[in-house]
Length: 102
Image (tube, rainbow, N blue to C red; front, side, top):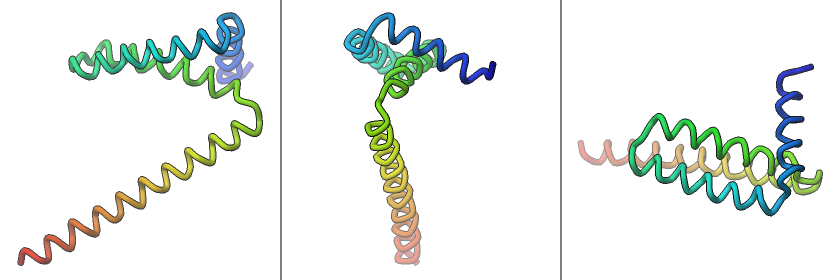
């Protein structure tokens, strides 16, 4: 069995056991713990909490129906592209400011 398929099956099993509402609450808790690790600059705990957030978030994403999953993927793609455009604009702005200095 493919490793990703195995992991996906395990995540599905966990989500089905606890249910949508509990996993949404769990995600909130894990994100709060990740926030604390970041604020405390606790790298070891940061990695652990990042893994926890990733696990619960992936469970939730995997359970989206086809329409919602497609919409999620489109929104994610749009946000990535928007950020890259902003990044390019910032680079152009920085270059234009450097030219104005001289």
